[in-house]
Amino acid sequence: MNASVAVRLERLVHGTKLNYDERVRQVLRAIAADPSHDIPALARLVTLSDSRLSHLFKLETGCSLQTFLVDRRLEAAALALCQTENSVKEVSYTVGYRHPPSFVRAFRNRFGCSPSEYRAQQQILRMCS
Image (spheres, rainbow, N blue to C red):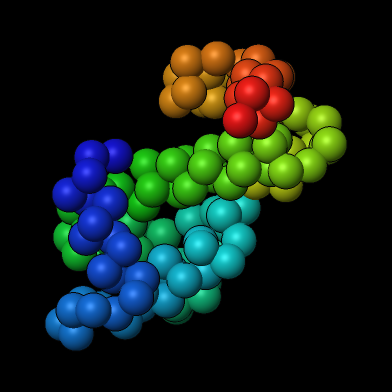
């Protein structure tokens, strides 16, 4: 996700621009609180169909809801890998992945290394600082 989209989404979450749809802000707050939500659950939260919510989210933010969810899940996973001793499998389930291999593949695509390698790198960086 590019920086301008991230800034726009940050404004959405904190309501700094008043003309955004409240349902999108509600979805953003729900994802911030728990990135394991899936699109059907988020759609039920704001009483929209999955497709209508996805369309509205893209229209309001310029970013697809699925892309945003994956991004937030991977950020939460990276944080959990650094702050807990949970296994990679446990972390994958915690952030909303049902299949750990899918999580590992997505994590590698985003961070350029496996979750285990990422954890080891972060531990080394902490020891050196």
